[in-house]
Image (cartoon, rainbow, N blue to C red):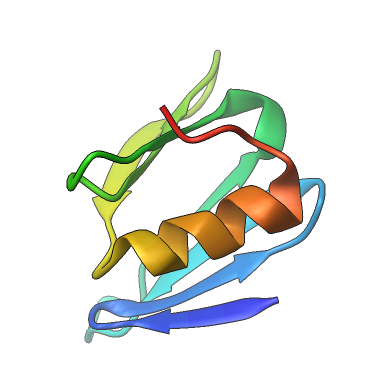
Length: 77
């Protein structure tokens, strides 16, 4: 599943999340779903925190976060 947002796109599978930011730097963030936390309540943030990974990114809407939650089976906190 591909979800477009204002800073780029999020590519979601049941096993991993890849965020590609649209900028001159061509930044790509990747994480296995085991290291992902989805933060709702208006924050709409994907946070990755693992042994070799630490990043977070804010999405445009809670609907985008819910789509990710459905695809990955991660509960929104």
